[in-house]
Amino acid sequence: MPTKKTTPDLILIIITLSLLAVGLTMVYSASAIWADYKFDDSFFFAKRQLLFAVAGIVAMFFIMNVDYWTWRTWAKLIIIVCFVLLVLVLIPGVGNVRNGSRSWIGVGAFSVQPSEFMKLAMIVFMAKFLSERQKLITSFKKGLAPSLGLAFLAFAMIMMQPDLGTGTVMMGTCVVMIFVAGARISHFVMLGLIGVAGFVALVLSAPYRMKRITSFLDPWEDPLGSGFQIIQSLYAIGPGGLFGLGLGQSRQKFFYLPEPQTDFIFAILSEELGFIGGSFVILLFALLLWRGIRIALGAPDLYGSFLAVGIIAMVAIQVMINVGVVTGLMPVTGITLPFLSYGGSSLTLMLMAIGVLLNISRYARY
Image (cartoon, rainbow, N blue to C red; front, side):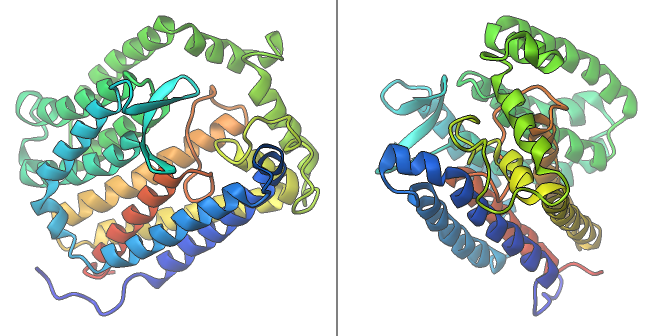
């Protein structure tokens, strides 16, 4: 291994902690009314998010000091464990059902979402696979098919929950990693056509997904049903204007926008902090992407480069989908906004991933 630098990427740490601070503030602001009504404690969601944030920060700084090659050594075991968890979550009595998806395993008073951790496990394994077979990636049979085969298996198991959003992020991340590895464009065109056909089949196979597509095209066709969330989200963003209504002054969080502290937290942020606040958050994500790309380009080996690319692609894809949904540019799907949305598994996973990225930065030359 190359000589390790004494310090990690301090700018990346500042960006991450800034996003986390904004997230904790907005989780409280968005959830206080609902938490007080349901649990008689306006800090209920904020306290739990803070607990996971502290645990995630501890994990981030711990992983930052673990040589990233360690994950290459344990890649097979890590992905096997995640596959086992994906099987367990489908077993009635083990997996908990929320909003129609059996995606959580209860651990005491908290719940763990195995599909979230599968995203990072797949990145770790894919980075190992691609770094070892990078010269074969132009071959469909020896490179592309094996690399995507495992990802499709994980995607199929996640869809059995079902959780299209998480599965899409995972597959999108794998595709980016394979593209960066040098796969042929012709192979991507062919797989793209198959993917579109598969997506259409998935949409047609579930009536609720078809409703999401129709509500995306015209939410006012069913304003109290499938179009309700996106309409309420736009009602939040519109009045925000340039500077917003003020922190804590959202109207849509008063039981109009369902569970605003989760997938639609960006709508509440835009309502309270306006275009300026929303743009600031997008800028922070853009800076995070910039630092991640620099780390990937400066990594001393292929494994480090692919690992960094996978992590930053996962974050970027998730941000684009979440913001696209909230602003009405994409059909509604259950995707959290990294570092901001309420959710322990998602927050912990993202901070762990940043920890891996920070360790790579200690070896990177840039």
